[in-house]
Figure (cartoon, rainbow, N blue to C red):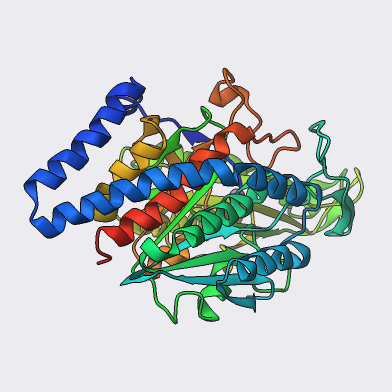
Length: 462
Ligand code: NI
């Protein structure tokens, strides 16, 4: 995903993270209330869940050294999207050693594992992503990445600068925990290890879209899916929100065509550089002056501008690329229309032309947390995070996890991984060469994945 900015929530999280004790009490109380208010079957269900939760905590503690070892190994050996060959083999071999049914080569390097519990029940899916980024690591770690590659014609480092190493290791940890509890699990857990979340290499397909096309959500079909992402926040805090929680990402390419001329005689041509400058400035008024941002956030970014080869030659054309981020489909259509109108009409006013393209990704949904599912699973989330939760977190980056949620109700959580005492705004963002994962926060992620799957199935998959 591409990092822009986070919106820490307000109000509710202050109350909810106030005290560990009150959160534990609340979790215990909710179990008590649930048990008291429901039928005998219901109370048996709650008891099963409570016993399972205690066991999950014990098993997570036991598997953590292995999770850290996996994470450091993946960190030292990062692989770009659609090239996660080594990572996928480690995952597949390990899942097989746990006795899971394993499918490899899904969407090139994806791995899907199926754990059938000892009791009848529904099906739930857990998802992690495995790919790294063309970023040269600047964090001084014993397991720092020294891997280099050629990307878009440039020699660059490869780094797990978005924490997908931690996601893969945490999901392997959750698989260990749940496989150890197989006899108690009422239903089936599907583990989806996905390649190329950051996007496939140019000219290739990949990621969640191809995982789904190649059957990741079939045989058996889950009725819910859970996933999480590390982000620079208080360590061990889980953040989420009902509804649209991460943006839809659309590409933006604008080609301005003018008429080439000598740099000393601009009137003999049409200068596409000046026209492009006017377009860039005007595009910012779409979000600042034309869009009701009280409904949802929106961002228009022009990140590259290329034209010309020499200071005294006005070029024929200029190419700009950028990104458009929105949370609401109608707002997206409106912002796209305004971008196109602004670019075309400014170009026309100068005798140039502009063509606007939003790329192939256009048309996907935002990461959307099913409100009913979130309400049902909030006690689990609050319990595993020891009350450190933010139930009002919006994040501008996007995630192809949204594609699974188009098919199956799902939740996507953010796990805080800062060093203690480092504020959210002071930490290196995802995709930075300085991105850092505090491993002390990872047990919360493993507990969340295992706990959500177990509690969901124990509560009767719907
Ligand atoms: Ni990411």
